Amino acid sequence: MTLRTFISRPLTQVAAAILMTATLVVLTYRFSAAEGRAQEAVVAAPRPPGVVAFAPNAPQLSSIVVQTAHMETMPVSSPQSGRIAYDENHTTRISSPIAGRVLALHAEVGDSVKTGQALAELDSPELGTAEADWQKARADELRKQRALDRAETLFDGQVLARKDLEGAQADADQARSETRRAVLRMRNLNAANTQNGVFHLKAGLTGIIAERQINPGQEVRPDMTAPLFVITALETLWVLVDVPEQMAALLHAGQGAVVESDAWPGVRFSAKVDRVGILLDPGTRRIQVRCAVPNPQRKLKPEMFAKVSFLPDGAAVQAVALPNTSLFVEGRYNFVFVQTKPGTFEKRRVTLRRSEGDRSFIDTGLADGEQVVTEGAFLLTTEVGGDAR
Image 1: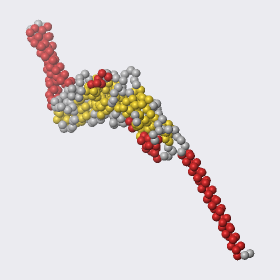
Image 2 (image 1 turned 90 degrees about the vertical axis):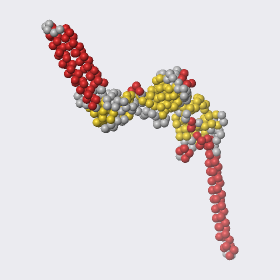
Image 3 (image 1 turned 90 degrees about the horizontal axis):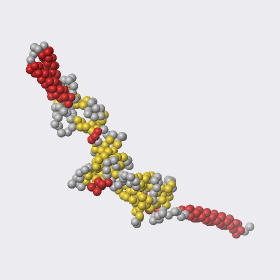
C-alpha cells in the first residue's frame, strides 16, 4: 500500500461525514420552514369582519370590562338634579314648651324612640308654679263645692235665701273653671302632678333621632329658634326637584320616577311624584316637584344630592340602557362591541335614541341580556381596524 492510498482513505471518510451533516441541515431547515408556513397560514386565516378574538390568557382582556345590557323604560326627559329631604309627614321637631335647665339626656342621634318616650329632664320653676296652681285650684274647687252642698241643704230647709244659693253656685262654677284651666296647662306641658318641678321632654313620634341641639346643663326656652330634637321615620323620604317650566305639563301626582345617587352607583330607587308645585320661581323659572321614595334599607340619607328621571304614563317606550363609555363613533354612526363568547368581541352598529347624563338609550342593534363592552372599546377598535358588521 502506497502512502497516497493511505492518506486518501481518511479524506474520503471526512467527505462522507461532511456530506451527511449537510444533508441533515437541509432537511431540518425545510421542515422548520414548512412548519412556519403552516403557522403563518393559521394566523393569516381570514376572520369575520368586525370581529376580534383573544386567547384565554391574553393580557388585553384585563383592560376590557363587560356588562349585561338591560331593557328599560325611557324617561320623559333627561335626569333632573334634586335633593333628598325628610318626609315632613313623618317628621317632628321638638322644642321645650317651658323654660328650664337640662338635668339629664336619655337619647342620642341615631337612637330609635317611641311616642311618649322621655328624651331629656329639665329643672323648671315654671312647671313647679303650674303644678302648684293646679293643686290650689283643685283644693279651692273642693272647698267651694262643699259650700254649695251646704247652701243647697239650707235652702231646702228654707233657712238660706236664694240669692246666697246662687252666689255659692257661681263660686263653685268659677272654681271648676279654674281647675280645668290648670289641668289643661299641665296637659299642654305633657306633665303629671308628680313631677315636683322636673319636666320630662318626650318624643312626639315613633322614629329615629336625626338631630340633637341640647346638652346637659343648657338653659332652654320656648322661643329658641332651633329645635332641641328632630325625630323622623327614614323608611320614606322626599326628593325635591326643581324642573324647568317646560316640563310642568308632563308631570302629575302619582307619576313614576327613578332616583339615582352618587352614594350608590348603579342602584336605581323607585319613586312616585307626590306633588307638583303651583308656583313658578321667577328667578330660576323652575317649578318644585316633590317625589316620595321608599327607603326600607335606609340607604338614602337626607341632604344627599340625587338625579331623578320621570317615567312616562301609558305605553312606555322600551330601550336598552348603556353607559356612554360603551359607545364610539365612526363617521355618522354609533358602534358598540358585543361579547359573543369569552374572548371574542363583535363590532356592532347601533341606533342611539337618546343620550342623557352618563347613559344612553339604544333603539336598535342590541337585544336585552347581551354582553356589551363598557371599558376597553378603544383597544378593540385598534385591533379590529375599520371593518364593521
